[in-house]
Image 1 (spheres, helix red, strand yellow):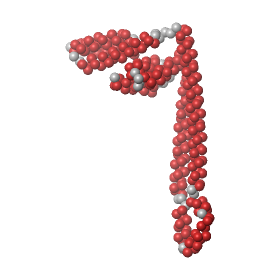
Image 2: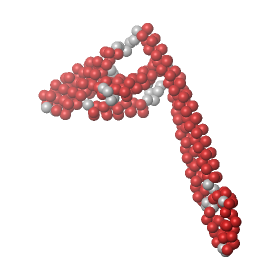
Image 3: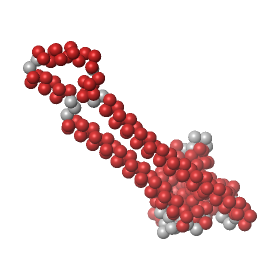
Image 4: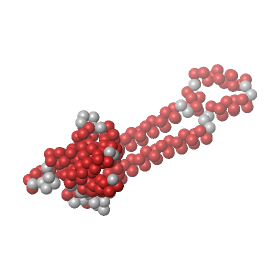
Length: 268
């Protein structure tokens, strides 16, 4: 029994390796053999796990057959490359629009800051006292009856404390500084992405743009067809894994796709 279990584990391991190498039909064969052994050993947990893997493999194989082989005829490949170039142009235009929007937002923030400063000057207690000219004579009569010390205390209370003014100014400066930092970080990130795409070979650009288009379709399919969405995410993961890390670091993107696949598998 131990030898049978070891053989099943070996087949399961080989199947996973073949999946990484995109040999899906061979991986399916190994999983089938491992499932047969686990069924004989009555390991229901392992059998259930392998059944799920086989279902996913079947979808991937069908998806690959629909898309065709990796080797694309010259005319079709040229057409796909033109589509990718168009997508890149659209993407760059969107980026430029986002940068313009951020610049407009920054100007709006500065205008809002100017309006706040203007409002603060309008509600300054000293200006309030100057605006009350019609009842000035009445106030003078009352003030003349009060001791000079009480008048001074009231005037001091009417003025905002220096500490409060400094706190308000400090908070506003900190807020504006953080806004500028966020805008600068976003601009740098977008510039780095554009610079990276410019230096990549055409084949890698094609793969990255293809993954982006598939991701957009998968996001729409999540609420319509979970199985199709799962197949798209699995294909995206394969594309990302096939891109050399020394050319483009897609660690974060791969992690996000893996989490999405796990989330969809849990819903099925």
